[in-house]
Length: 328
Image 1: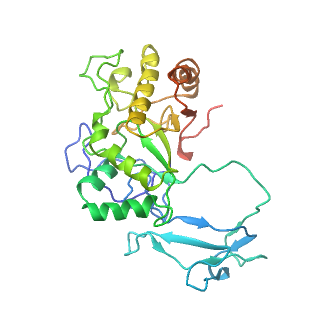
Image 2: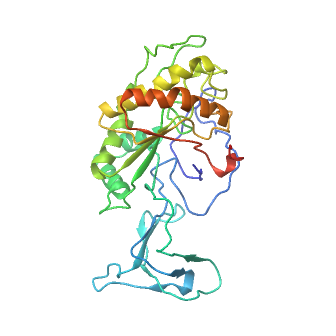
Image 3: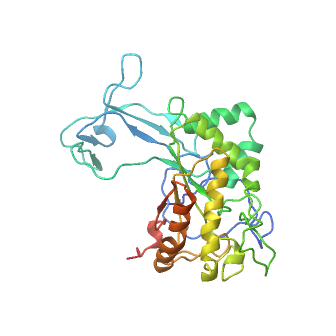
């Protein structure tokens, strides 16, 4: 997933004192503020109502309003969040579609007769920090207003998909954690120490709240790292998965999925690894080359999911354009 600059709660990474700023890799940035990493600074969302031929940009776009001030038939609604102003999911004037050549500049061409892939949903991640802020820093009225603004199809922008970290991501309140942490040098191949208790404190309640607001919400889960004891680095930071723990890691996925399902959160999709070709030096990550991913999915994760009776599907190569080349 593309990362964008957005304010977030302070976090503490292993090996860094509170207050120290993490080093972030350079990446393209846009003027819009997205919230793949924090739900409290959401991206202005554009929804299209009705087919059209072309939508010229800027002055070439006609403004259309219905008789009651609502959107006219075939109009386009948009909302903007700009952290440099007071705009927070602020509705913009409805833009009307029109046919013909547009003025100089970008033109979006829409051909309703051509169909490609089906879009499952649009959304973000309820990261550890996002859920913590929503639970601990907002009063109930403000939290409900925020959650409705994000997830309600009627009262908000109707986010319809969540991509959930399995354990710590680079946005965790108290640094790295997995669902089966062990002291350095110790292992737990039977997963006797597995627990989703960490998420039950504030992540699962917010996810269940989001699902109540939007029952059509699609859930995807993926890890930033396997538990450290499964890896060559004996840490959630850097390293790769040891082959002797492929089977245990597949069962780790199944335990997570069953635990979330028991909590009322069915998971539609998983991927093996967030940004599998990138190993960050200061937050959880893991190298999973294409060959490793294929072996793990084909011989371990796929069969484990099939035997579990779960309907969760597997998505491969969950990465960004910054992590090319694409495996073949």
